[in-house]
Image 1 (cartoon, one colour):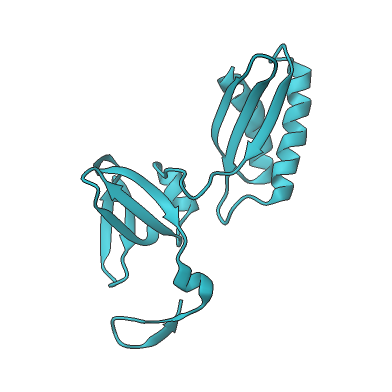
Image 2 (cartoon, rainbow, N blue to C red):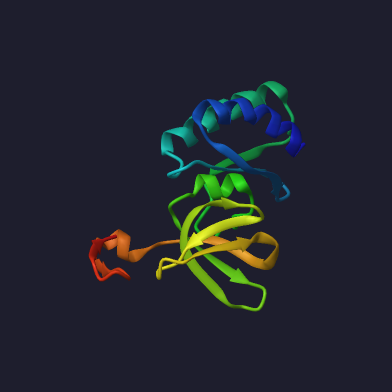
Length: 163
């Protein structure tokens, strides 16, 4: 059923400019939960979520795919949503990512885009590292507080720069 709902959702998502990350159905005895996770470069505007909700509700009513009552939840992924695909790395280019390796070690850097088997990160010291998604436990977005706060940081060359 999730595949059929995804088919109904695809043209709606394309129209509002978001990618569908997951469609799932679950829930309790009296009411099922239909959860749709969508994402877009720069985040998903609230009006896009509203439009998707209205349009999918109309489609679901017309198709009558879920016999009982259900609750529809349209959401965007949080920072802890794992990034795994080339599309994920394109969508979040320029953002700070944290790769946690199977041995527990971590590497944080700016996403400069997908590479052959994963993503290329630029670390604080200016080095570029290719991260193979098959060699990590998880890659997630993180907040770069120095960029957010506008605080000056020293670059390797000694020049002051606002991040």
